[in-house]
Length: 458
View 1 (cartoon, rainbow, N blue to C red):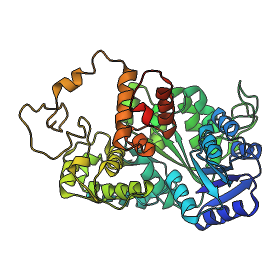
View 2 (view 1 turned 30 degrees about the vertical axis):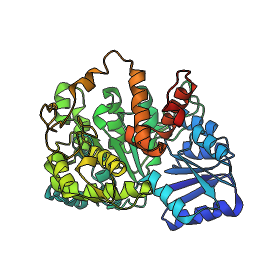
View 3 (view 1 turned 90 degrees about the vertical axis):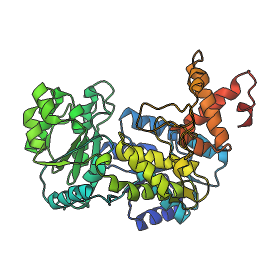
View 4 (view 1 turned 60 degrees about the vertical axis):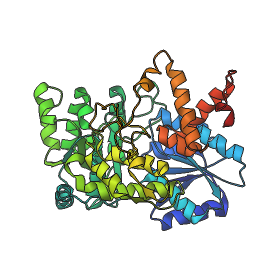
């Protein structure tokens, strides 16, 4: 993990740097946001940036957004009041860490934001075979195409391959081909020179150069515009790239991994993907099974997520009841491991006591009441999904008709906050929104003149 520290707080920053190094991080330090910006544009990447709270965090965040550099920011400072810390988070920081640094707090923040793990949690024979193949091919420099449904863990396996390779000490750089507009992707991959196009205010090193010596993951490669695929093919074949607006090619030494949740052979037949690029990427094919086909992965994964989110929320350790596990194994898991993580995070927050029972496992097309393990009542309504809806009241759904989306959203947010006894962090996690979004919504509700006993409480 690469940590960039921005600012100069003498011994306090030094102490934080030492803690991070002891935790295995590679640490760099610059004195101001301009130097940090130049460093990142020159390809000296970072996985986390700690910024002294009195730096212009809002300006720095905007600079990074303009260059599409996505790195989590953590504000830090000595004897900072709550208002200053809150302003730093509003400006774009994900967390605030007080100095002098607490070793466990620094470690928790680094772990929570980077979420780097070099092991793959599993318990099924199907996943064991996939990982055995991954370990076998890892030492080579051959391109690998990792396929599978969304949420099956393709990027996790890509990182596993990198960590088992001879390039493990070098950068692992991932670029999401589905998240970047086609007209910006060339610059993202190959970089650009200052003035190469409107908005190119400085030279920018692309992902190919940033990954030099290491591994480049092209995530969801099937989403790449076919016009750019020819340039990508040349870069892979020749191991050299041309920056946008550059005068000469630049040699790179990288290994290519790619992922796709589509059938690329079918895309080739339809003309949506170049056949020559497909064969160049698909030197080794590594398909990952969906979660419904590896149910034995559910117990260790569920336990892992329970432990992770119990610690993250300062809650005591909890066990999964046999009834809850039966309910999890019966689900079809269209969202795969990503869906399981979300459900277990919610279960940790909803559970009563030290056991997560079936009532805390809220699956799609169910509610808190539907998740209860009570027997079916007369008049139960069957949900369209495999989950059986127990005791649902049909008029409840019709009560929403005629109301605005804003009104329904407001009621949902306030009811969830009531359920969490005013704990905004837990409410935001259950709702699937950021703390900042929740805060903005509550401020918006408190500004309204209509009386509301709930909105006045928070």
